[in-house]
Image (cartoon, rainbow, N blue to C red):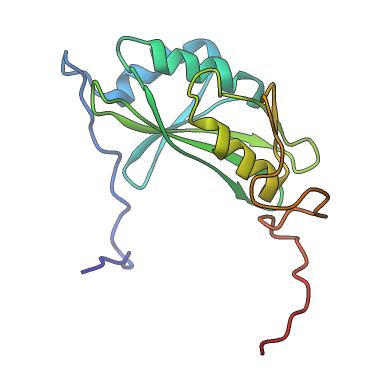
Length: 171
């Protein structure tokens, strides 16, 4: 059964993921990410941290290597088009602590550039190529941003809201 949001009901708080010392992830992140001045919050049931786009790779490396966090697995990297800005979203998981969180960075559609995280997680390669194809986000330092889903020379970014879909006729 799918539970839907009903008027009068509140959105659930972030799940309380505890490390081996019993500290909640939401209380650990302000110290772990302090030098990046993150905006911390919760989305549905996950702790979120929003950092400057230029800090993404360093923040990811810190989250991976910090003994309190150990986010060793990038489960997903995606882009959300909010029209006024694009949001690059990293879903992270710690196989050690069983923590899950989301790291975000907002970029303008005209200057959609963030550093690559392929040196942090090799699995980011295809996620970044897909995001480059569909949304036009450039991952600075990526070893090969050749098209993954689209053909070379494809015009535009079909993941963006302002992409004009060509007319087509059903058979």
